[in-house]
Image (cartoon, rainbow, N blue to C red):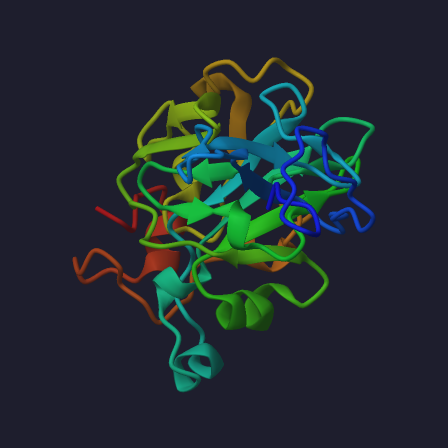
Amino acid sequence: DPRLPGGKLSTDALPYDNPFVLSESATVKARRYKGSIFGSTEWSPLLEADFVIGAVPATSSNLRISKINYHPSGASDAEKATGFSRKDFEFIGLTNVSNESISLYGTELAEGIRFEFDNVTNSQIPPGGTAFLVKDSAAFTMRYGSNHAVLGEYQGSLSNDGEQLTLHADGTVLADFTYNDVDPWPTDADGNGTYLVLADLNAPAEGYPVGRWRSSTPDDSPSASATPPRSDEDTDGDGYLDHLETLLGSDPNK
């Protein structure tokens, strides 16, 4: 209110004795209000800005989509008893390749599956750290353990046949590529117990070409996803169990 005590108008800026201090990353929206001696009011256009606290914003230089588990191995008997199915164990890994903490505030996964990081309480990834977006948090914890940073659950499901993934922040594209389940992409990641891993995190992010991806190994984390196909499943319904097809060099998904 531009009126001072006594109703006297002043063009001087009012003092702010109690400034608003951000304790976490947020989007601030503000307008400037101007009164008139004739009783009319006027608002300035809305200004909007993202403020990142305690970290630098995510960019295509410091962030990588590093893991894609689009077709997990089948649920075990214990997992089935809990109500989980194969798709519940999907995940995407995001890795900070810089030496500073980065914030994903203002970032959005927009193609195929969807996730907005503005709703995450703590969307920061420490230097060299990896955090996960998952299909189901409880399923992820049951299979892969509780020692992994989970940012949240995305909407939709990853396609078993490959699809486009787009990560952007305020209109700037951080990653945009299409993974696939056929050669030359690592076909072991297509329901055979492994997942896609970005082999060289330090290479430029442009394009995420197929040559930079490999199948996960037991040394990768979460390591529990690198388990062999279950012996009691026949994914493609051809009468041959998955583990037998794998041993014979056939594709248990076709």
